[in-house]
Image 1: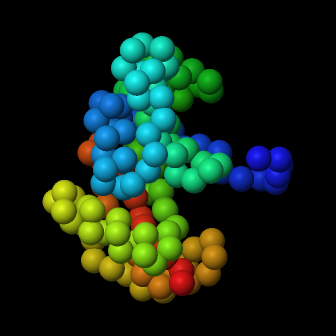
Image 2 (image 1 turned 120 degrees about the vertical axis):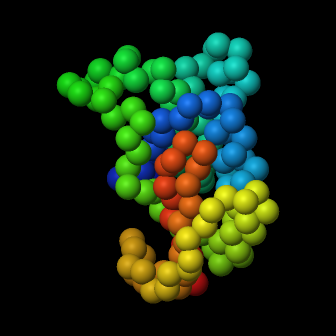
Image 3 (image 1 turned 45 degrees about the horizontal axis):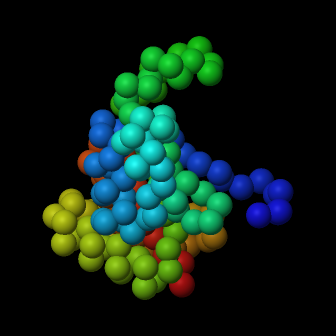
Amino acid sequence: MTDNTTRLDHVVLWVRDPVASADFYEKAVGLEPLRVTEFAEGKASFPSVRLNEETIFDLAPLTMAEHMDVVPGAADSAGHPVNHVCLSLTGQAFDALHTRLEERAVPLSDFTYDAFGARGKARRSFYFRDPDGNIFEARHYE
């Protein structure tokens, strides 16, 4: 990609079991796993999952926390997820995600309607947790 405008590159999520988390994000959420084999073989520090062509979620094992000293106190963030991350989907992908999560008995919130976001008011949205307690909102605008 040659477009150098400001964009979201990645979000790091703290997880207990990166391989299991990658499996959840692939099968329940529908994201493409990256570097899972390399992580399992000790050749990568963590696996990731691809949200779209320019954004990924890194699945950082909690054991990495002590090495996350990029700024003072950074290691203390391990196990403390952000409030939530919002995924914007097409209406069809939104319904498919809801169905996959229901099939796996993932607890889901009720639908909300007309919630404000980056592209205005979303028609519908709902919330769910991953196996490590990270909270996600799924929404669609059309």
